Amino acid sequence: MNIKNARIDGEIRNVLISGGIIREITDRELGQGYDAKGNRVIPGLIDLHTHGMLGEGVMGGNFAELNRAYANHGTTSYLATTSTMSLEQIHRVNDQPTDAPGAQVLGFHMEGPFISREFKGGMLEKYIRKPDVELFRSFHDVKMITVAPEVEGAMDFIREIAKETKVSLGHTAAGYETALAAFDAGAVMLTHTFNAMAPLLKREPGPAGAAIMRHAYCQMITDGFHIQAPLVIAAYRMFGPDRMVLISDSTEEAGLPDGEYHHQEKVKIVKNKTIRLPNGTISGCWNCLLDNVRTCVRFGIPFSDAVRMASRTPAEFLGVKKGQIKEGYDADLLVIGDNMDLISTMVQGEIFYERSTQE
Image (cartoon, rainbow, N blue to C red; front, side, top):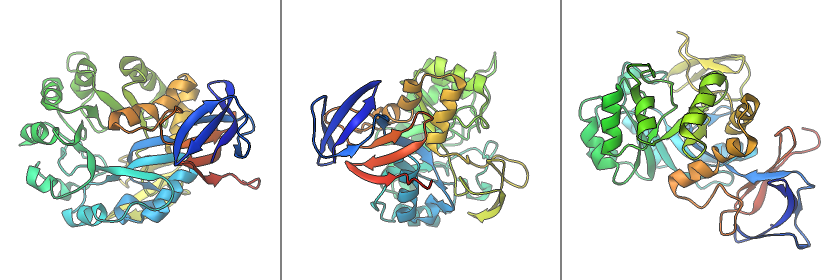
């Protein structure tokens, strides 16, 4: 389906689409097509780290509902992120069909189980394990795994697995030197930077300092709660929009009203758009990825860079032809209003979601 009267980078253009691919961006009249009515059109968002939303979780394996929910909120593709749970549970989810209509699952992100007990965050300690290459290879389509590099056997694991899968450092007590060694061994990213990791201090800069020195990518939860505005801006300036990746880290409770919920052997408390365990530990993000893009803009990050960090940058990280409004790229597009409200979502050239006048 073509899109006409689309405001792209400030100019009104028409987008010719066929076979789910952008074929041409032009000023000439295209005839029939979806009329964007002069609203901004941006690339569909790509979430590298998300566990679910609106009561559905990746660990539940209901990708028909998940794909629909993500697309309805502006995320057109994502890595289905598993939690540190039993191997049986992770295998069960890993074996579920993911190709339901809506947002496209680009593969899996395994957040653990090879993580630190000290910085487990909201993960269940009883399921944490030592890194095991053979065990890891029993899973399929894993595009990224979060590992704590200081745990026994982790460095050898990273050297081997980095040949085939993106390795991100997270849920880690690693100091600066250990994190440097992990990047040198093949790690390429930080998981939810500044959260669930040793802090960046003046004489012990930790994993974040190592990522800066090794020009690694960093994930960032920019909901304004996990990380305050000054640190979001600092990370943006240190890593730049080509290496900082916005994520949601949303969980099943994202978007749900205040209350107590029971998911994944845990009790979660939602209050004022935050999610915590009963002991006060933060356990996921209430926002969707588009919310976090809006927050970046509110913090003062240029609109184009905020969008890039949730589309083009994660696409380049994964090596997929998404995240840009450019000939030859997948036609995953969002139509948004001046307040960044979502009007329509297009996935692979077809309108999947369109806001009704009653919304």
